[in-house]
Length: 238
Image 1 (cartoon, rainbow, N blue to C red):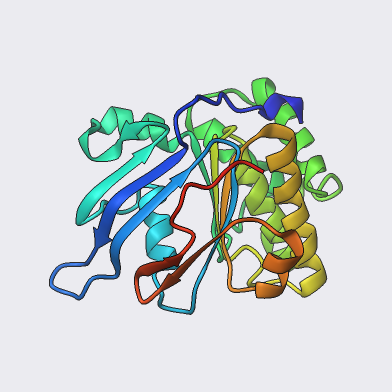
Image 2 (image 1 turned 90 degrees about the vertical axis):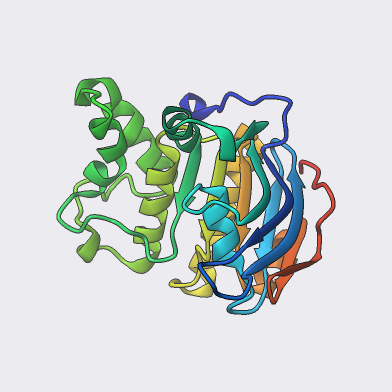
């Protein structure tokens, strides 16, 4: 895993200042959110269904822009960046989606390698890297398997490997244990903890699993009806 050490800076990985979000004429989904996450921090995001967790994550991986306020990633103000700068910034962010978003006609190896292939890299330059990463998430024997032939836990670990292949400085996971059994959920969370401790990757995980939150004992941001009701203060690294 030594190939995956991110290039960290002294700037906060995530900074939200007075951020609000609404779609068109709808009511606000997020209201006056203030968050500051240091490089290397490990943070849970929780709240009831509809509280705004997924909307907040979309702001962080630049799928949406705030209606008000400022989102800064790695010290950069996202609202004033050019398209080219935003594209470079997105490459520093890995996202693990709840619904996996794997391409079913591609093997595990091909799913993980796809971002590198799309960027124009040749397979001989990244093959060992992809294989090492698949082994690290416990899929060393499933390199050639197609997603439909894999269990839910295997697919989730595959989506984690895909999120890591570009060596992100920030890893965002949206309900990563929502489709797996409790024991696999713990195994997946241990992968995130190991990644954070060994490589200093900043990690934010949205989850409603309070049992896992208590077990892994990390700082918690809690949303309620679009408001941050707990944990808006600066979060320290683990």
